[in-house]
View 1: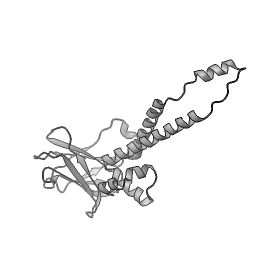
View 2: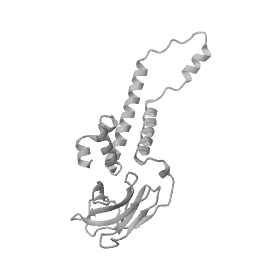
View 3: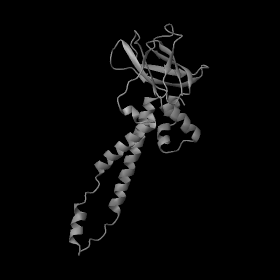
View 4: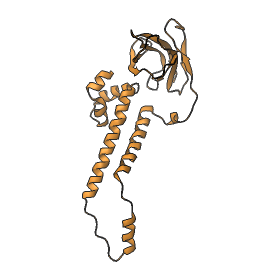
Length: 221
């Protein structure tokens, strides 16, 4: 599924509401693993749905008639009075944390990335440099990280695509240009959903959308 199609079909909203067909769900999941904008939309919709359910539960609880207090048990009445009622703000905060955590697990498939770890960084300029090199992604690694020179002309955004061994496009997307003006750019590409084998990463940017980074990498399972 392409990004424009996901936006046009409101895929994020329908995904959280379980309104996508199995084929649409699989296509959208494959897309938002590589699309930060759609991933943010999914997290927002999950948070909104969780908060809406919390408000509905609060309103339903307030409409429910309270049980009559027992006159003979004054100590029990004091305990009931002292018991804190669930505040709506707390429900918002708790559901937000729950939705954010669920979104993180959904998008990463693991919580191991929350801890510091070393990662291999590969130099990947245009196709004229090191075209025969194939970077080896070690088993268990979930990202392919590359560094390449920033284009001479300023670019507001960049696009990327991942090609399989036969040249078939496996994923693609767009990225906003970083706020910094460093001489080099760094890109972290999720590879968890890609099959084993050799893949090609192509990044385009600059005023004419020229190729600014081109590299091949091998995934082993």
